[in-house]
Length: 275
Image (cartoon, rainbow, N blue to C red; front, side):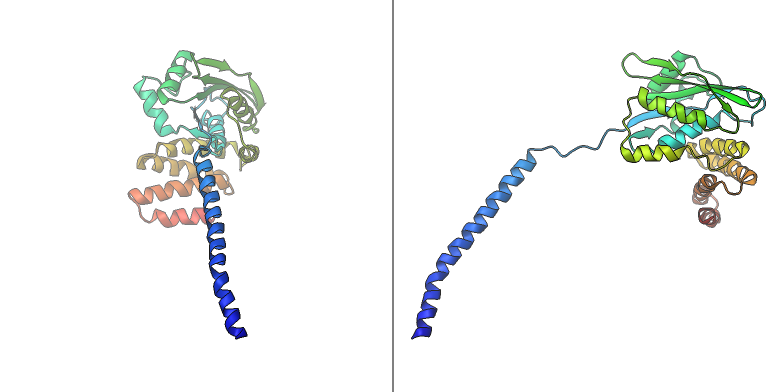
């Protein structure tokens, strides 16, 4: 009888337990529903907009400097900007056709009005151009920052003089000034990248100049340009076998040519990446 009584009391308590559980589940469901409504009313934080920037080769007298030296400061700045998550860089594949459409020669010093037209055609917030001159062992570089905001302005930079061997000193200062002018906010991770971006990877100005010229060709993206880039990168590595960024760039262009016409270059690219 006691057993039956206990069983009967359990049966009598069961509905109450079910009611309690249903009440808890309903309360949790209501809480989840309210939370969902609250979250639905909040916009998902958007990724910060990237500032679009273009950099063209600097122009000047090459006497006493390697051929194509103007690619050195521009490539150093481009290399740094490519590593900034808050920046979207216009590549040479965009810049060269835009200059052609406007009848502009990138090999000459362009007037302010032409630079502004080029920047607007590229639809960038900012464009970085510049000039250089050599006096003995010193190279003086002066940038021009083209800001398309509003009516558009050209901000001339201060001349920056440094020994020819310290070829990344001026580009580092120019990049910092460009971030300020174009109102680019660098998150902490971008600031750390910027600090390391201006490490040349080589002490050879000749090697870096060849590498910089090759990087511009590589940016054009077509098979012939990659072929020219490969030749320039290989010459750069003849000057400095330990130039790691150049080996990576060589691997990229070798792989690109393997996809287009020379399958064996895929294995050569892998060797460069391993090196």
